[in-house]
Image (cartoon, rainbow, N blue to C red; front, side, top):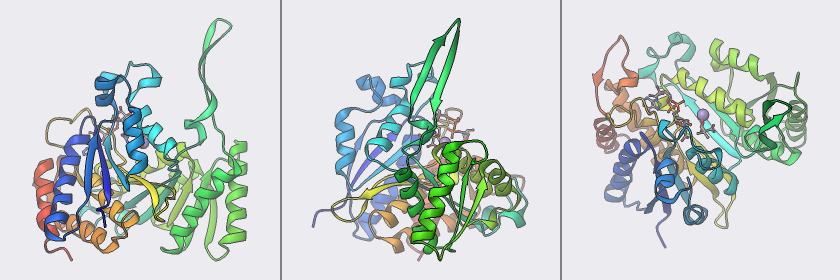
Amino acid sequence: MANPSLLILAGDGIGPEVMAEVKKIIGWFGAKRDIAFDVSEDLVGGCAYDKHGTPLADETMAKAQEVDAVLLGAVGGPKYDKLDFSVKPERGLLRLRKEMDLYANLRPAQCFDALADFSSLKKDVVAGLDIMIVRELTSGVYFGEPRGIFTEGNERVGINTQRYTESEIARVARSAFELAKRRDNKVCSMEKANVMESGVLWREVVQEVHDKEYPDVELSHMYADAGAMQLTRWPKQFDVIVTDNLFGDLLSDLAAMLTGSLGMLPSASLGAPMANGRPKALYEPVHGSAPDIAGQGKANPIACILSFAMALRYSFDLGDEATRVEKAVEKVLADGLRTADLMGPEGGKPVSTSEMGDAVVKALDTSL
Ligand code: NAD
Ligand code: IPM
Ligand code: MN
């Protein structure tokens, strides 16, 4: 049987730096576990714009549709900030999400014991935390029409439109309920039904899907602003959170701080099942291209490494191997290894991006 195929799109800034560490892990699986992947690489974001004048070439888009999974680093950077919206690096990523129809973005926030002291919140609040934010990824205000900057009278007006259909809400709600069944069986849905009609519909549809298909899962609803407050007050009250595209973007960056650093948060973006029964999928860290630290060997590769672990679990049915990677990360953190973003007053062994990757690879031998 052919090896599973992976398309690596490392992107810009720290994207290629953190992806280099994932490649070491892929190499380890080939050498030590006889689990080989057919890896191809291509450009996305600013680097694709530099070469092709577009942040995602059609050929790259076509490749992404064919492979078993895409791994993405990060896109964007100040060099591209003034570009027209249609060719901005971020549009490459948005095109991948939209055309692959990756509607369910899983953003787990787990606090590793070794980092419980490091969070900006009290240790009690975050120790043992394990929540999953399910962010709708292909609709909402990111894609709604009309959009643009127009002239009205003698001034400009910027317009974006929040739009959700019933079926878009229902399918992401199902993803959240399915995940909850395999976890603590609790879903909290967040919107702003108090001020937005799309929020009213969101709440109704999530409730309907629950009542008809998942009556045994505990469901609650919360306004997203209150949800942000509750996430910092007592995050352990949550298991699975399901929310829209924009609120999910904000709430997941907030959740990053519960784990210690944005450099710790992985994600999986999943679509409908392909012919082989597995979902269309793209895996990427939640963080961006971090221009402030790019090229300095300071980036934390763990978010990208844990994103690859999610690929093992969700695209390749290799849950035990995913756990092996997660345990290896846990071990290096317990050993005190810290990239710059994880260095607090309590100290630790300062390591570079590649030293952290090497340590995780070494820990893989003994992590299970
Ligand atoms: P960012 O996530 O790139 O950085 C925010 C802060 O977190 C910075 O101080 C950065 O140094 C730090 N940080 C992020 N990842 C880190 C890591 N792995 N290790 C250590 N520190 C890390 O967000 P930003 O600065 O708001 O955006 C920069 C660019 O990235 C923008 O062009 C933005 O559009 C883009 N972006 C891309 C993605 C993506 O590709 N998925 C996600 C978010 C932002
Ligand atoms: C993310 C990023 C993206 C988003 C950008 C880069 C398009 O912030 O993946 O969280 O807003 O979705
Ligand atoms: Mn974001």
